[in-house]
Length: 144
Image 1 (cartoon, one colour):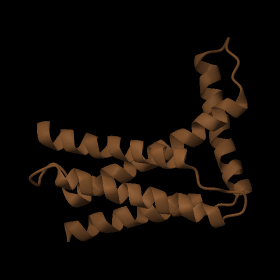
Image 2 (spheres, rainbow, N blue to C red; image 1 turned 45 degrees about the vertical axis):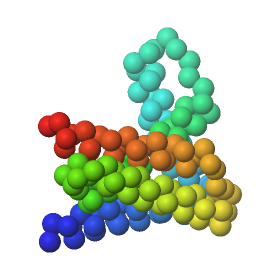
Image 3 (tube, helix red, strand yellow; image 1 turned 90 degrees about the vertical axis):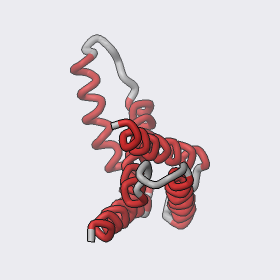
């Protein structure tokens, strides 16, 4: 039963990622602009004498979103596959391949959305986030 619950959580997270990817360019920019504004406001509170360029902050927010959402996917897939509990690093590799294939399919689907496109750099950011999530779970289970 516990395995089924983990699988459902992973699938729901993947659906959420696909939901964000299926937004057209206007919806995507609108959503990330709200997050950018909040992030910029926090930065201005922390560093009141600094000026922040909205377009640079917006770019960083979008790339951090890729990294973070895939970090969480890496963690969830790792728990589903019991990374760190099974023998060998083969499971770590399997989790990484699963996340990589999902990232590639996610970017490929964006080719069919108005104003969106696929970027290899986004796949690299995605797999970096997923890899860090997998490593986090592996090290946590191995040493703690």
